[in-house]
Amino acid sequence: MVSRFLIALALLAAVPALAAAPPPLEMNGARNLDVATGWTLFKRPWISSPSSLSAGGGVGPLYDARACSSCHIGGGPGRVAEDAIGEGLAVRLGHDPVYGDQIQTRALPGFDPEADVAFHWQASNGMRAPALDFAKLYYGPLAAHAALRRAPSLFGIGALESVPESEILKGHGHAARIGGVLGRFGWKATMPSITAQVATAFQRDFGIATSGLPGPWGECTEAEKACRAAPGQTIELPDTMRDYLVAYLRSLQPVAALREAGPGFAVFKASGCLACHAVLKDAQGAPVRAYTDLLLHDMGSGLDDGIAEGDAKSSEWRTAPLWNLANELSQGGLLHDGRARSIAEAVNWHGGEASQARLTFNALSPKRRKLLESFLIGK
Ligand code: HEC
Ligand code: HEC
Image 1 (spheres, rainbow, N blue to C red):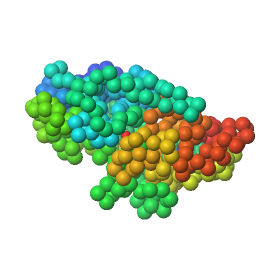
Image 2 (tube, protein in one colour):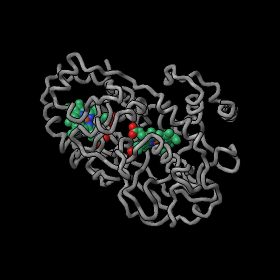
Image 3 (cartoon, rainbow, N blue to C red):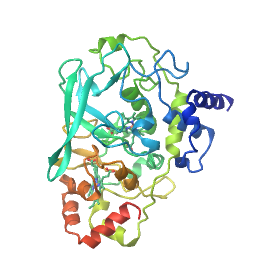
Image 4 (tube, rainbow, N blue to C red):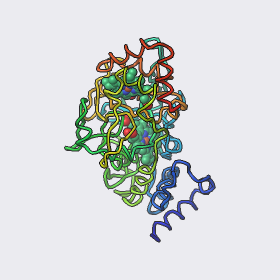
Protein backbone atom coordinates (compact mmCIF):
# COMPACT_ATOMS: atom_id res chain seq x y z
CA MET A 1 0.00 0.00 0.00
CA VAL A 2 2.68 2.44 1.04
CA SER A 3 4.80 1.73 -2.01
CA ARG A 4 1.85 2.21 -4.35
CA PHE A 5 1.10 5.46 -2.64
CA LEU A 6 4.71 6.56 -3.07
CA ILE A 7 4.69 5.65 -6.75
CA ALA A 8 1.50 7.64 -7.21
CA LEU A 9 3.01 10.60 -5.41
CA ALA A 10 6.26 10.40 -7.34
CA LEU A 11 4.37 10.33 -10.61
CA LEU A 12 2.15 13.21 -9.66
CA ALA A 13 5.21 15.20 -8.65
CA ALA A 14 6.86 14.33 -11.97
CA VAL A 15 3.92 15.70 -13.96
CA PRO A 16 2.61 18.75 -12.15
CA ALA A 17 0.34 19.75 -15.04
CA LEU A 18 -1.52 16.46 -14.76
CA ALA A 19 -1.71 16.60 -11.01
CA ALA A 20 -3.75 19.76 -11.41
CA ALA A 21 -6.25 18.07 -13.73
CA PRO A 22 -9.79 17.55 -12.41
CA PRO A 23 -10.72 14.08 -11.13
CA PRO A 24 -11.31 11.82 -14.15
CA LEU A 25 -14.97 11.35 -15.02
CA GLU A 26 -14.14 8.00 -16.55
CA MET A 27 -13.33 6.50 -13.16
CA ASN A 28 -17.01 6.36 -12.24
CA GLY A 29 -16.37 5.98 -8.55
CA ALA A 30 -14.05 2.97 -8.83
CA ARG A 31 -11.48 5.11 -7.17
CA ASN A 32 -9.03 2.85 -5.49
CA LEU A 33 -5.36 3.58 -5.44
CA ASP A 34 -4.40 1.09 -8.18
CA VAL A 35 -6.88 2.68 -10.56
CA ALA A 36 -5.74 6.19 -9.66
CA THR A 37 -2.11 5.23 -10.18
CA GLY A 38 -3.00 3.58 -13.49
CA TRP A 39 -4.81 6.71 -14.60
CA THR A 40 -1.72 8.76 -13.82
CA LEU A 41 0.43 6.36 -15.84
CA PHE A 42 -2.05 6.48 -18.72
CA LYS A 43 -1.77 10.27 -19.02
CA ARG A 44 1.91 10.44 -18.20
CA PRO A 45 4.25 11.42 -21.03
CA TRP A 46 7.09 8.87 -20.92
CA ILE A 47 10.59 10.25 -21.21
CA SER A 48 13.88 8.72 -22.30
CA SER A 49 16.24 6.85 -20.03
CA PRO A 50 18.40 7.45 -18.09
CA SER A 51 16.71 10.64 -16.94
CA SER A 52 13.35 9.02 -16.20
CA LEU A 53 12.24 7.56 -12.88
CA SER A 54 14.55 4.69 -12.04
CA ALA A 55 11.58 2.35 -11.94
CA GLY A 56 10.06 3.79 -15.08
CA GLY A 57 12.48 3.00 -17.88
CA GLY A 58 12.63 5.05 -20.98
CA VAL A 59 10.93 5.75 -24.24
CA GLY A 60 12.73 4.86 -27.48
CA PRO A 61 15.10 4.62 -29.20
CA LEU A 62 12.24 4.60 -31.75
CA TYR A 63 8.67 5.43 -30.79
CA ASP A 64 5.36 6.81 -32.03
CA ALA A 65 4.04 8.72 -29.05
CA ARG A 66 4.89 9.50 -25.44
CA ALA A 67 1.57 8.94 -23.67
CA CYS A 68 -1.30 6.46 -23.95
CA SER A 69 -3.66 9.42 -23.79
CA SER A 70 -2.14 11.04 -26.89
CA CYS A 71 -3.87 8.31 -28.88
CA HIS A 72 -6.72 7.31 -26.52
CA ILE A 73 -7.89 10.75 -25.42
CA GLY A 74 -9.00 10.47 -21.77
CA GLY A 75 -9.36 6.70 -22.34
CA GLY A 76 -11.66 7.34 -25.31
CA PRO A 77 -10.90 7.12 -29.02
CA GLY A 78 -8.05 8.92 -30.76
CA ARG A 79 -8.28 11.75 -33.23
CA VAL A 80 -8.88 10.83 -36.87
CA ALA A 81 -7.31 13.50 -39.08
CA GLU A 82 -4.56 13.85 -41.67
CA ASP A 83 -2.15 15.18 -39.03
CA ALA A 84 -2.95 12.51 -36.43
CA ILE A 85 -0.39 9.76 -37.16
CA GLY A 86 1.23 9.10 -33.77
CA GLU A 87 -1.75 10.83 -32.20
CA GLY A 88 -4.80 8.65 -32.66
CA LEU A 89 -3.54 6.79 -35.72
CA ALA A 90 -0.75 4.27 -36.23
CA VAL A 91 0.74 2.70 -39.36
CA ARG A 92 0.44 -1.11 -39.13
CA LEU A 93 2.58 -3.39 -41.28
CA GLY A 94 1.96 -6.92 -42.52
CA HIS A 95 5.14 -7.99 -40.75
CA ASP A 96 8.20 -6.54 -42.50
CA PRO A 97 11.64 -8.16 -41.99
CA VAL A 98 13.21 -4.71 -41.44
CA TYR A 99 10.42 -2.50 -40.11
CA GLY A 100 8.51 -5.02 -37.99
CA ASP A 101 4.77 -4.72 -37.33
CA GLN A 102 4.37 -0.97 -36.99
CA ILE A 103 6.11 2.13 -38.33
CA GLN A 104 7.75 4.24 -35.61
CA THR A 105 7.70 7.82 -36.80
CA ARG A 106 9.79 9.33 -34.00
CA ALA A 107 13.27 8.72 -32.58
CA LEU A 108 15.53 9.95 -29.80
CA PRO A 109 18.36 12.32 -30.82
CA GLY A 110 21.09 10.37 -32.63
CA PHE A 111 18.69 7.79 -34.09
CA ASP A 112 16.73 7.75 -37.33
CA PRO A 113 12.99 7.18 -37.09
CA GLU A 114 11.64 4.54 -39.47
CA ALA A 115 9.79 6.81 -41.85
CA ASP A 116 8.35 10.19 -42.64
CA VAL A 117 4.81 9.18 -43.47
CA ALA A 118 1.56 11.03 -43.96
CA PHE A 119 -1.75 10.14 -45.56
CA HIS A 120 -4.53 11.75 -47.54
CA TRP A 121 -8.15 10.84 -48.09
CA GLN A 122 -9.06 9.61 -51.52
CA ALA A 123 -12.53 9.12 -52.92
CA SER A 124 -13.62 5.49 -52.83
CA ASN A 125 -17.03 3.90 -53.45
CA GLY A 126 -18.54 7.41 -53.22
CA MET A 127 -17.02 7.69 -49.73
CA ARG A 128 -13.39 8.14 -48.62
CA ALA A 129 -10.49 5.85 -47.74
CA PRO A 130 -6.97 6.71 -46.57
CA ALA A 131 -3.93 6.49 -48.86
CA LEU A 132 -0.50 6.48 -47.20
CA ASP A 133 2.28 8.72 -48.52
CA PHE A 134 5.81 7.66 -47.54
CA ALA A 135 8.09 10.69 -48.04
CA LYS A 136 11.16 8.90 -46.68
CA LEU A 137 12.03 5.40 -45.48
CA TYR A 138 15.19 5.47 -43.34
CA TYR A 139 16.09 1.76 -43.38
CA GLY A 140 15.68 0.86 -47.04
CA PRO A 141 12.68 -0.36 -48.98
CA LEU A 142 9.53 -1.52 -47.26
CA ALA A 143 8.54 -5.03 -48.32
CA ALA A 144 5.32 -5.42 -46.34
CA HIS A 145 1.92 -3.90 -46.88
CA ALA A 146 1.21 -0.79 -44.75
CA ALA A 147 -2.17 0.48 -43.57
CA LEU A 148 -3.68 2.87 -41.09
CA ARG A 149 -5.25 1.81 -37.78
CA ARG A 150 -7.16 4.10 -35.48
CA ALA A 151 -7.05 4.01 -31.68
CA PRO A 152 -10.45 2.82 -30.47
CA SER A 153 -12.23 3.89 -27.31
CA LEU A 154 -11.20 1.81 -24.31
CA PHE A 155 -14.42 2.39 -22.37
CA GLY A 156 -15.96 -0.92 -21.37
CA ILE A 157 -13.04 -3.22 -22.25
CA GLY A 158 -13.05 -4.68 -18.74
CA ALA A 159 -16.55 -6.00 -19.42
CA LEU A 160 -15.37 -7.45 -22.75
CA GLU A 161 -12.57 -9.24 -20.93
CA SER A 162 -15.05 -10.71 -18.45
CA VAL A 163 -17.10 -12.60 -21.05
CA PRO A 164 -16.28 -16.33 -20.77
CA GLU A 165 -14.69 -17.93 -23.80
CA SER A 166 -17.47 -20.55 -23.95
CA GLU A 167 -20.05 -17.76 -24.37
CA ILE A 168 -18.12 -16.19 -27.27
CA LEU A 169 -17.67 -19.56 -28.98
CA LYS A 170 -21.48 -19.91 -29.24
CA GLY A 171 -21.34 -17.21 -31.94
CA HIS A 172 -21.02 -17.77 -35.68
CA GLY A 173 -17.80 -15.95 -36.52
CA HIS A 174 -14.18 -17.03 -36.77
CA ALA A 175 -12.44 -17.37 -33.39
CA ALA A 176 -8.84 -16.09 -33.41
CA ARG A 177 -6.43 -18.07 -31.24
CA ILE A 178 -3.12 -17.05 -29.75
CA GLY A 179 -1.34 -20.06 -28.31
CA GLY A 180 -4.66 -21.75 -27.61
CA VAL A 181 -6.28 -18.71 -25.97
CA LEU A 182 -9.07 -16.78 -27.67
CA GLY A 183 -8.03 -13.39 -29.10
CA ARG A 184 -10.48 -10.63 -28.19
CA PHE A 185 -8.72 -7.24 -28.36
CA GLY A 186 -7.41 -5.27 -31.32
CA TRP A 187 -9.17 -4.70 -34.64
CA LYS A 188 -8.22 -8.22 -35.69
CA ALA A 189 -8.59 -9.90 -32.30
CA THR A 190 -4.86 -10.56 -32.05
CA MET A 191 -4.62 -9.92 -28.29
CA PRO A 192 -5.85 -12.46 -25.70
CA SER A 193 -5.97 -10.04 -22.76
CA ILE A 194 -5.76 -6.41 -21.73
CA THR A 195 -2.37 -7.17 -20.18
CA ALA A 196 -1.03 -8.46 -23.50
CA GLN A 197 -2.38 -5.44 -25.35
CA VAL A 198 -0.75 -3.07 -22.85
CA ALA A 199 2.63 -4.82 -23.23
CA THR A 200 2.32 -4.48 -27.00
CA ALA A 201 1.43 -0.79 -26.70
CA PHE A 202 4.52 -0.20 -24.58
CA GLN A 203 6.70 -2.00 -27.10
CA ARG A 204 5.27 -0.68 -30.37
CA ASP A 205 4.20 2.82 -29.41
CA PHE A 206 6.84 3.79 -26.83
CA GLY A 207 9.78 1.38 -27.24
CA ILE A 208 9.46 0.45 -23.56
CA ALA A 209 10.22 -3.14 -22.50
CA THR A 210 7.98 -5.15 -20.18
CA SER A 211 8.34 -8.71 -18.91
CA GLY A 212 5.89 -9.82 -21.60
CA LEU A 213 7.96 -8.23 -24.37
CA PRO A 214 11.50 -7.71 -23.04
CA GLY A 215 14.37 -5.87 -24.78
CA PRO A 216 15.04 -2.11 -24.55
CA TRP A 217 14.90 -1.69 -28.32
CA GLY A 218 11.12 -1.88 -28.51
CA GLU A 219 10.14 -3.49 -31.78
CA CYS A 220 13.34 -2.62 -33.69
CA THR A 221 14.49 -5.59 -35.77
CA GLU A 222 18.06 -6.87 -36.12
CA ALA A 223 18.31 -4.87 -39.34
CA GLU A 224 17.93 -1.64 -37.32
CA LYS A 225 21.42 -1.94 -35.89
CA ALA A 226 21.91 1.35 -34.03
CA CYS A 227 18.59 0.91 -32.25
CA ARG A 228 19.40 -2.68 -31.25
CA ALA A 229 22.85 -1.61 -29.95
CA ALA A 230 21.52 1.19 -27.74
CA PRO A 231 22.04 0.57 -24.02
CA GLY A 232 19.05 -0.12 -21.79
CA GLN A 233 17.48 -2.49 -19.30
CA THR A 234 15.91 -5.75 -20.48
CA ILE A 235 12.75 -4.86 -18.58
CA GLU A 236 12.10 -1.13 -18.32
CA LEU A 237 8.64 -1.16 -16.80
CA PRO A 238 7.99 -3.40 -13.80
CA ASP A 239 4.88 -5.62 -13.82
CA THR A 240 3.38 -3.68 -10.89
CA MET A 241 3.24 -0.50 -12.98
CA ARG A 242 1.77 -2.35 -15.96
CA ASP A 243 -0.84 -3.86 -13.66
CA TYR A 244 -1.92 -0.41 -12.37
CA LEU A 245 -2.60 0.52 -15.99
CA VAL A 246 -4.57 -2.68 -16.50
CA ALA A 247 -6.59 -1.91 -13.33
CA TYR A 248 -7.36 1.56 -14.70
CA LEU A 249 -8.44 0.15 -18.08
CA ARG A 250 -10.68 -2.44 -16.39
CA SER A 251 -12.38 0.35 -14.44
CA LEU A 252 -13.48 2.26 -17.56
CA GLN A 253 -17.23 2.07 -18.04
CA PRO A 254 -18.89 2.21 -21.48
CA VAL A 255 -20.35 5.51 -22.68
CA ALA A 256 -23.88 4.24 -23.36
CA ALA A 257 -25.93 1.33 -22.04
CA LEU A 258 -27.94 0.74 -25.29
CA ARG A 259 -30.71 -1.44 -23.84
CA GLU A 260 -32.26 -4.09 -26.08
CA ALA A 261 -35.62 -2.34 -26.18
CA GLY A 262 -37.50 0.37 -28.03
CA PRO A 263 -38.21 1.09 -31.70
CA GLY A 264 -34.56 1.82 -32.63
CA PHE A 265 -33.42 -1.52 -31.28
CA ALA A 266 -36.25 -3.22 -33.19
CA VAL A 267 -34.95 -1.75 -36.47
CA PHE A 268 -31.37 -2.79 -35.55
CA LYS A 269 -32.58 -6.33 -34.96
CA ALA A 270 -34.76 -6.46 -38.08
CA SER A 271 -31.78 -5.29 -40.18
CA GLY A 272 -29.73 -8.34 -39.21
CA CYS A 273 -27.09 -6.37 -37.32
CA LEU A 274 -27.32 -8.63 -34.24
CA ALA A 275 -25.85 -11.54 -36.23
CA CYS A 276 -22.45 -10.02 -35.40
CA HIS A 277 -23.20 -7.04 -33.14
CA ALA A 278 -24.56 -9.41 -30.49
CA VAL A 279 -25.25 -8.97 -26.78
CA LEU A 280 -23.04 -11.41 -24.85
CA LYS A 281 -23.33 -12.46 -21.21
CA ASP A 282 -20.63 -12.18 -18.58
CA ALA A 283 -19.73 -14.97 -16.14
CA GLN A 284 -22.62 -13.93 -13.85
CA GLY A 285 -25.09 -14.06 -16.74
CA ALA A 286 -25.47 -10.27 -16.93
CA PRO A 287 -25.77 -8.80 -20.44
CA VAL A 288 -22.75 -7.01 -21.88
CA ARG A 289 -24.37 -4.45 -24.17
CA ALA A 290 -21.31 -3.80 -26.32
CA TYR A 291 -23.03 -5.25 -29.40
CA THR A 292 -20.09 -7.37 -30.47
CA ASP A 293 -19.66 -11.14 -30.66
CA LEU A 294 -15.88 -10.57 -30.32
CA LEU A 295 -15.37 -12.82 -33.36
CA LEU A 296 -13.81 -12.24 -36.77
CA HIS A 297 -15.92 -11.79 -39.90
CA ASP A 298 -15.02 -11.52 -43.55
CA MET A 299 -16.10 -7.98 -44.44
CA GLY A 300 -15.33 -8.20 -48.16
CA SER A 301 -12.86 -6.48 -50.46
CA GLY A 302 -13.81 -2.89 -49.57
CA LEU A 303 -12.40 -3.31 -46.06
CA ASP A 304 -9.55 -5.64 -47.04
CA ASP A 305 -6.39 -3.72 -46.08
CA GLY A 306 -3.94 -6.30 -47.39
CA ILE A 307 -2.69 -7.22 -43.91
CA ALA A 308 -3.31 -10.65 -42.43
CA GLU A 309 -2.58 -10.66 -38.69
CA GLY A 310 -2.55 -13.65 -36.37
CA ASP A 311 -5.46 -15.86 -37.40
CA ALA A 312 -7.25 -13.02 -39.20
CA LYS A 313 -7.21 -12.81 -42.97
CA SER A 314 -6.73 -9.40 -44.54
CA SER A 315 -10.49 -9.04 -45.10
CA GLU A 316 -11.44 -10.26 -41.61
CA TRP A 317 -12.15 -7.92 -38.70
CA ARG A 318 -13.40 -8.36 -35.18
CA THR A 319 -16.96 -7.08 -34.85
CA ALA A 320 -16.50 -3.56 -33.48
CA PRO A 321 -18.28 -2.77 -30.19
CA LEU A 322 -20.99 -0.13 -30.68
CA TRP A 323 -21.46 1.22 -27.15
CA ASN A 324 -19.09 4.17 -27.59
CA LEU A 325 -20.24 5.31 -31.03
CA ALA A 326 -21.19 8.87 -30.07
CA ASN A 327 -17.70 9.36 -28.68
CA GLU A 328 -15.96 7.69 -31.64
CA LEU A 329 -17.92 9.82 -34.12
CA SER A 330 -16.90 12.99 -32.28
CA GLN A 331 -13.23 12.24 -33.03
CA GLY A 332 -13.75 12.17 -36.78
CA GLY A 333 -14.16 8.62 -38.01
CA LEU A 334 -15.39 5.05 -37.59
CA LEU A 335 -14.05 1.66 -38.72
CA HIS A 336 -10.47 0.41 -38.28
CA ASP A 337 -8.88 3.33 -40.11
CA GLY A 338 -11.42 6.06 -39.38
CA ARG A 339 -12.64 6.30 -42.97
CA ALA A 340 -16.38 6.36 -42.15
CA ARG A 341 -17.73 9.78 -41.16
CA SER A 342 -21.16 8.53 -40.13
CA ILE A 343 -23.00 5.38 -39.13
CA ALA A 344 -24.43 5.19 -42.66
CA GLU A 345 -20.94 5.30 -44.21
CA ALA A 346 -19.70 2.63 -41.79
CA VAL A 347 -22.56 0.33 -42.81
CA ASN A 348 -21.97 1.07 -46.49
CA TRP A 349 -18.44 -0.31 -46.15
CA HIS A 350 -19.91 -3.58 -44.82
CA GLY A 351 -19.45 -6.27 -47.48
CA GLY A 352 -18.71 -10.00 -47.41
CA GLU A 353 -20.68 -11.71 -44.63
CA ALA A 354 -22.36 -8.37 -43.84
CA SER A 355 -23.59 -7.64 -47.38
CA GLN A 356 -27.21 -8.54 -46.66
CA ALA A 357 -27.28 -6.29 -43.57
CA ARG A 358 -25.98 -3.41 -45.71
CA LEU A 359 -28.71 -3.94 -48.30
CA THR A 360 -31.38 -4.11 -45.60
CA PHE A 361 -30.02 -0.92 -44.00
CA ASN A 362 -30.06 0.92 -47.32
CA ALA A 363 -33.66 -0.12 -47.93
CA LEU A 364 -34.86 1.38 -44.61
CA SER A 365 -37.20 4.37 -44.77
CA PRO A 366 -35.54 7.62 -43.61
CA LYS A 367 -37.63 7.45 -40.45
CA ARG A 368 -36.57 3.91 -39.55
CA ARG A 369 -32.95 4.66 -40.35
CA LYS A 370 -33.12 7.64 -38.00
CA LEU A 371 -34.53 5.42 -35.24
CA LEU A 372 -31.68 2.94 -35.74
CA GLU A 373 -29.04 5.70 -35.66
CA SER A 374 -30.53 7.31 -32.55
CA PHE A 375 -30.48 3.94 -30.81
CA LEU A 376 -26.79 3.48 -31.65
CA ILE A 377 -25.68 6.88 -30.38
CA GLY A 378 -27.61 6.34 -27.17
CA LYS A 379 -30.23 9.02 -27.80
C1 HEC B 1 0.31 5.78 -31.44
C2 HEC B 1 -1.05 5.69 -30.93
C3 HEC B 1 -1.31 4.80 -29.74
C4 HEC B 1 -0.74 4.87 -28.48
C5 HEC B 1 0.31 5.83 -28.01
C6 HEC B 1 -1.40 3.86 -27.70
N1 HEC B 1 -2.32 3.19 -28.44
FE1 HEC B 1 -3.57 1.74 -27.78
N2 HEC B 1 -4.22 1.45 -29.67
C7 HEC B 1 -3.80 2.16 -30.78
C8 HEC B 1 -4.30 1.52 -31.98
C9 HEC B 1 -4.04 1.99 -33.41
C10 HEC B 1 -5.03 0.38 -31.56
C11 HEC B 1 -5.67 -0.67 -32.45
C12 HEC B 1 -4.56 -1.64 -32.74
C13 HEC B 1 -4.90 -2.71 -33.72
O1 HEC B 1 -5.82 -3.47 -33.47
O2 HEC B 1 -4.23 -2.81 -34.75
C14 HEC B 1 -4.96 0.38 -30.09
C15 HEC B 1 -5.59 -0.58 -29.29
C16 HEC B 1 -5.53 -0.59 -27.90
C17 HEC B 1 -6.28 -1.49 -27.04
C18 HEC B 1 -7.27 -2.56 -27.51
C19 HEC B 1 -8.66 -2.00 -27.55
C20 HEC B 1 -9.70 -2.94 -28.10
O3 HEC B 1 -10.88 -2.74 -27.86
O4 HEC B 1 -9.36 -3.90 -28.80
C21 HEC B 1 -5.92 -1.22 -25.76
C22 HEC B 1 -6.41 -1.90 -24.49
C23 HEC B 1 -4.94 -0.14 -25.81
N3 HEC B 1 -4.75 0.22 -27.12
C24 HEC B 1 -4.31 0.40 -24.70
C25 HEC B 1 -3.25 1.30 -24.78
C26 HEC B 1 -2.44 1.69 -23.66
C27 HEC B 1 -2.61 1.21 -22.22
C28 HEC B 1 -1.51 2.56 -24.12
C29 HEC B 1 -0.33 3.16 -23.37
C30 HEC B 1 0.56 2.19 -22.75
C31 HEC B 1 -1.77 2.73 -25.55
N4 HEC B 1 -2.82 1.94 -25.91
C32 HEC B 1 -1.06 3.59 -26.38
C33 HEC B 1 -3.05 3.30 -30.77
C34 HEC B 1 -2.29 3.72 -29.69
C1 HEC C 1 -21.15 -10.08 -40.60
C2 HEC C 1 -20.96 -9.32 -39.38
C3 HEC C 1 -21.57 -7.94 -39.28
C4 HEC C 1 -22.87 -7.53 -39.51
C5 HEC C 1 -24.05 -8.39 -39.96
C6 HEC C 1 -22.91 -6.12 -39.23
N1 HEC C 1 -21.68 -5.67 -38.85
FE1 HEC C 1 -21.19 -3.79 -38.31
N2 HEC C 1 -19.23 -4.32 -38.12
C7 HEC C 1 -18.74 -5.59 -38.30
C8 HEC C 1 -17.30 -5.57 -38.24
C9 HEC C 1 -16.39 -6.77 -38.39
C10 HEC C 1 -16.93 -4.23 -38.03
C11 HEC C 1 -15.50 -3.66 -37.98
C12 HEC C 1 -15.04 -3.42 -39.41
C13 HEC C 1 -13.81 -2.55 -39.58
O1 HEC C 1 -13.44 -1.82 -38.66
O2 HEC C 1 -13.22 -2.57 -40.68
C14 HEC C 1 -18.18 -3.47 -37.94
C15 HEC C 1 -18.24 -2.10 -37.71
C16 HEC C 1 -19.43 -1.39 -37.57
C17 HEC C 1 -19.50 0.01 -37.24
C18 HEC C 1 -18.31 0.93 -36.92
C19 HEC C 1 -17.98 0.87 -35.44
C20 HEC C 1 -16.72 1.60 -35.06
O3 HEC C 1 -16.57 1.94 -33.87
O4 HEC C 1 -15.84 1.81 -35.90
C21 HEC C 1 -20.83 0.36 -37.22
C22 HEC C 1 -21.43 1.71 -36.92
C23 HEC C 1 -21.58 -0.84 -37.56
N3 HEC C 1 -20.69 -1.89 -37.76
C24 HEC C 1 -22.96 -0.91 -37.66
C25 HEC C 1 -23.65 -2.01 -38.14
C26 HEC C 1 -25.08 -2.01 -38.40
C27 HEC C 1 -26.01 -0.82 -38.15
C28 HEC C 1 -25.38 -3.24 -38.89
C29 HEC C 1 -26.73 -3.72 -39.39
C30 HEC C 1 -27.29 -2.95 -40.49
C31 HEC C 1 -24.16 -4.01 -38.93
N4 HEC C 1 -23.13 -3.23 -38.49
C32 HEC C 1 -24.05 -5.33 -39.35
C33 HEC C 1 -19.49 -6.74 -38.52
C34 HEC C 1 -20.84 -6.75 -38.85
